[in-house]
Amino acid sequence: MLFRSSFRVNGNLCSSIGKISTNLLIQLPSIGSPKYEGKLITDKFNLGQFINQTNIGYITMNAKVAGSGFSNDDFELNLKDEISALEIYGYTYKNIGFNLNLNKGLYSGELQINDPNLSFTLNCTIHKLSDKRLHFQTKGLVTDRKSTRLNSSHLVISYAVFCLKK
Image 1 (cartoon, rainbow, N blue to C red):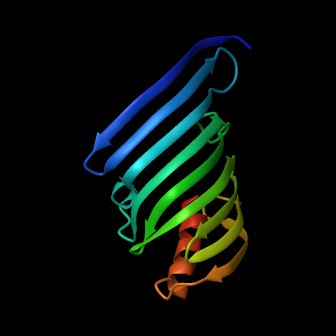
Image 2 (cartoon, helix red, strand yellow):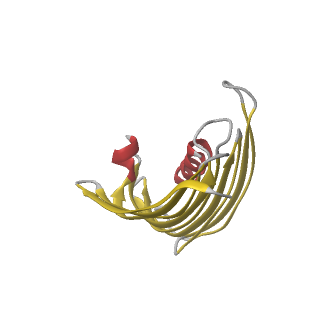
């Protein structure tokens, strides 16, 4: 496939809410959808402030991104992530992995938390039936919860954040 333009985006963004680093290869073919792949890394980035959600705090992650397209008609994205720390409701979860696929109205993902105080696995699929209707199919399993700091409302809210934000 011949590419009209192919370029790499390497950058570091440092601000009052944290640091984001990118290393992305973007390819713009003369025919077909644009393609992109690379890494997105955050270091103590205040995700909650960025998306205006007070229940979410800092995130430190190393994500692999691969996808194509920028419009609803041709958009596909795979995001594999290793989150070393994510703060939700004042508790910092550690050792989080997920694999997220977005594809023209079908969203599917796997989430696994191996925190010292929580072992949790979730598989989630969301089908966009229309602009106003979504179909959720989820399967979650809490295999170990050690700390009283993690009450059931934290688990339900964390689950909802994953399913509804993705």
